[in-house]
Image (tube, rainbow, N blue to C red):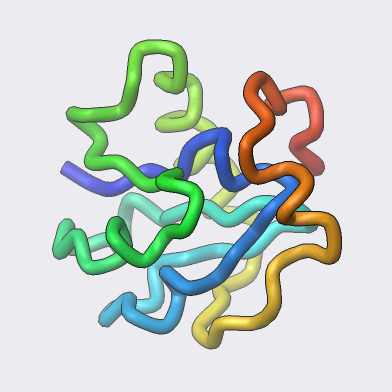
Length: 107
């Protein structure tokens, strides 16, 4: 099992989760983070750090977010590693509670 970043992260990209990851499994895109399933050691320390509750164990990903399992796997192979936290996106607070943002994902 691995952990998966879901839709709530889109257009927010808070990086609190990155600092606590012991294996540097997060990858960064323009407006979203993903977890590399080949690197994740299933420790779950990132879950409580996410201010928008975007991270789930693969087995617990909500049914309407299942596509993000593949999205994380696919994008992690081409996005660069992020190992230090930084500020969220400038308009993150405006987007943090917005639902149905998959069309906003920049790959």
